[in-house]
Amino acid sequence: MSASLDTLAGVTTPETTSTVDATPTGESRLALVRRARRIDRVLAETYPDARAELDFTTPLELLVATVLSAQTTDVRVNAATPALFAKYPDAAAYAAADPEELEEVLRPLGFFRAKAKAVMGLGKALVDRFDGEVPGRLQDLVTLPGVGRKTANVVLGNAFGVPGITVDTHFGRLARRLGFTTEEDPVKVEHAVGELFPRKDWVMLSHHLIWHGRRVCHAKRPACGACPVARWCPSSGIGEQDPVAAAALVRTAGPN
Image (cartoon, rainbow, N blue to C red):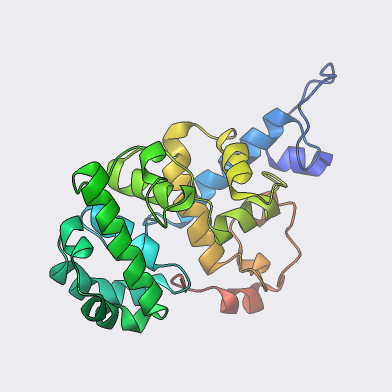
């Protein structure tokens, strides 16, 4: 890492240090940890209301909403779930659902037949193996149909308060742009980034990066000139630099 990034990170590395762990940016491991945590602190100040953007009141509702959010937006899921949750209040109701009736409720989300089949299968698995309750352990959640580590960590962190990192497309993109990791595989990203932060910070870290990715650090045209963490970002400059033009790119709410 260049001296300028070490300086921005507020890190002074003793000249006597001869061996450091390899990092994506070439900075010392200590510098990377301090820079990463500073970025998270600034994002926490920028997004004090950061949270899961799917509406839910129970672990089951969050689990179903997260499964339904594939290939659609959180906004569309939130518009459909009040009627869904009222009609199907528990896992047994999903397991016993009439496919055509469930498909009609889910029609606004697209892929409604596949999604109806998915939540019916999910309900049946919960009834058959977990007495109709959503399990609170990662190793159990990932055995459910349609549930991977990302969905499991969403549920664990937001419904059960269990630390976990949610690596969606936004999180992975920002983790690489910010120089936290070069990994592409979501599980490897999860582990690499998790090593930089205390476990107690993992859930909110996920929210901060996802919110920032949805609002400022867009995939195709990031608003670098309006980014609150640009000074600590090794990728700053890949997007719009003009502050006025960049501000016009900032979204007030996440698109998905």
